[in-house]
Picture 1 (cartoon, helix red, strand yellow):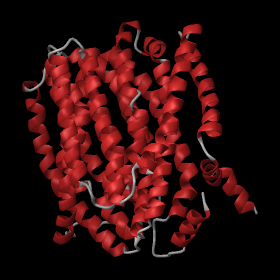
Picture 2 (cartoon, rainbow, N blue to C red; picture 1 turned 45 degrees about the horizontal axis):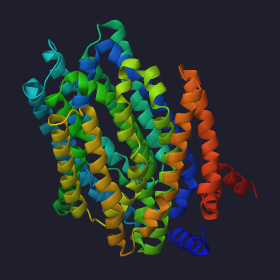
Picture 3 (cartoon, one colour; picture 1 turned 45 degrees about the vertical axis):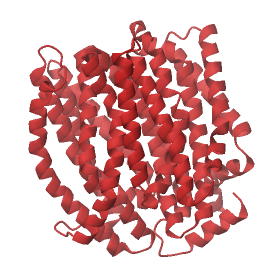
Length: 532
C-alpha cells in the first residue's frame, strides 16, 4: 500500500460522521476472510456428503425435482427484488454519511412493504405449487410429493425476504463472520431435519422442503437478534411508510429486477431446459455438478460482498482514485484465490466423481470442466458489481444481463435439441453467456462509471490464468501417477498441493504491495500492535 492510500484511509477514518470506513474493513478483514474459508469448507464437506445421501434415499429422478424446485424459487425472487433488493444500498449510503434517521426511515418503509408482500405471496405459492405438475415432467407416482416440495420451498423463501434487509447491519459493521456463521446455522437445521425425517419416516421429497423451512425460519430470528445488537439505532418501525422513499427505491429496484431477470436466465434455466427437453434423471445428474458450481459462486459472492461497504465508503466521499485502486486489488485477490481450488477441482475431477457419486457418473467430467474452470475469471470480476450499486447505475447492466440470459437460453435449447451434446451443450451455453457478461461487459462498464480505463481490472487477472493452468495440469498429472481411489488420498494429496500452490502464489504471483496488505490485516499483526 503506497503513502497516498494510507493518507486516504486516515482521512476517511477521521471523519466521525462515517459509519462505514476503510479502517473498519481492515480491522475485520482477517476475521471475515477466515470465517468465509470456514463456511466454504463446511459448505463443501456437508454438500459433498448430503448430495449422495439424498440421491441414495430419494433417487436421482426425485433429486432432479429438488434441483428444479430450487430453480423455480429463484424465479420468485425476481418479482420480490423490486421491493427488498435495494434497501441495503440506501441504508448503507446514508449510514456512511452519518444520516442515521434517514437510513432508518428507508429501512422502516421497506420493512412495512415486506410484511404486506408476505400476505400476497403465500396464497400465490399455494396455487403455483398445485399447478406445478402441469408444467414440468415429474417422476411417476410423485405428483403429491412434488406439489408439497414446491410449496415448502416457496414457504422457506418467505423468511429470506426479511433476512436480506436485516443483513444490512452486518454490512454496515462489516461483520461478515456473523453472516457466515448464520449460513452455517441454516444448513445445520436444514440437514438435521432431513436426517431426522428420513430416520422416522420413509424418505420423501417433501422432507427436503421441510428442511429448507426449518433452516430459513431459525436464521430469520437469529438475524433479527444480530441486527438489534449491531445497529439498534436502525431498528425499523412497522407501519412507517414513506411514499417518496419507497418510490425512490422502487425506481432503482425496477432496474435491479431487470438485472435479476437476467440472473434468473443465467442461473435457473438449466434445470427447466433439461427437464423439458430431456428427463428428470438428467436434471438430477446435471444438478450434482451444478451444486459444485453454486458452491463456488457462493464463496466468490461472500468474498466480493466484503467489498460493498468499502466501495460505498469511497463513493460517498468521491474518492475515485482509491476506488479504482482497491477494486483492481479486489479483482486480483479474488482471481488468485479462486485459481488454486478450481485448478485442483478440475485436475482431480475424475477420481473425485468416482469417489463421490460412483463410476457411472464419470461422463460428467466435461460438464464439470465447462462449469467450473471459467469461474476463475467470472468470479474475479464480481467485486466490480459493487460499483454499479454504489453509483446507482443498474439500468444498463440489467438490460445486458437479460440479453445475455436470453442468449444462454437460446443456445441451451439449440444445443440440446439439435445436437447430440446433451448436458455438455447446456454447460457450453453457460460458459459463453457468463463470459460475455462478466469478463467482457462488467469491467468495461465499471471503468465507464469511474471514467477510467478497464486495463487495471484485466491486468489484475493475468497471474490467475497461469496459476490455474499450472495447478490443473499438475493435479491431472498426479492423478495419472497416484491412485486416488479413496477420500483420504484425495483429501491428503489435495491439501498438500493446496499448501504448495498457496505458497507459490504468495511468493511469485503477488507483488510487495499485495504482501504488505496481507501483513497489515493479519490477526497476529493486530495483536502485536495492541501489545506495543
